[in-house]
Length: 320
Image 1 (tube, rainbow, N blue to C red):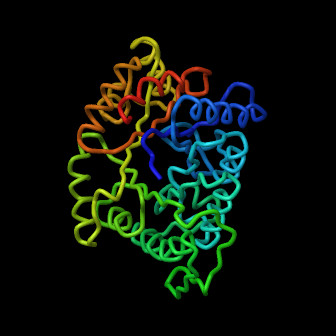
Image 2 (cartoon, helix red, strand yellow):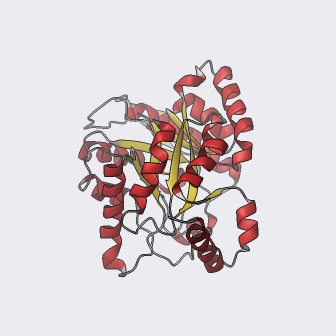
């Protein structure tokens, strides 16, 4: 399993209303596959996120959407970035992602994290708890999920979760990969070193050298060869044929959210410009420090036919 070039679809507000949502998502997934992306990802949320839109904006349930995408694609990997551990019983989550793997012919990746969006928890009736609570739950969940994905039958009498010789059949492989997502150098990175095949690092680009050093430390502490744990970075991309067009897309989104555009640009987490300009920024800020792969989203125009292909053609040479 490798994620060198992933395409995330985080936004479902498209022209045409609810009936147009899945056809537009499917078209992006097919275009991503055809143009050379190796993975298509969706968010595991029930409401739209504050940095993208209002909570009331459309949001598809992740695993239902991924199951449908399995039927309209052939080779691209399918995943969440990332599953909120708090939303599902861990044995049920293992079963869900394994079913996705079966129906997709072995293309599922379990992306997972501790969960963070408090409004969703409160309004949907999920326990939010403290930061410590959520990571305690994630640690116990991984003790159940990881062996289930490998064909083992785990038993656990934990503080948060239990399992008793739990079955997980059918499976099409014993190597369904796990991707942790997060920024925590102590907890998340340790879980990644212990359980995961891949880590998606969430931070500002200038923090990446420190994050990679911390990850190497966690691997050393657990006796793991750091080279066996792949890494990626999620980049919000505003790409167009001209720099002015790309900056206008970014400005439109900032106005929608009531944000100061200069503060948005100063954050360093958005990559704006022509295909060549964005490719140069990602090489310098993400890949040169040592991250293995890039996952992009294109909130402003990813749903426009041809835009995903434009991005793939610019970015594929970086990760070849």
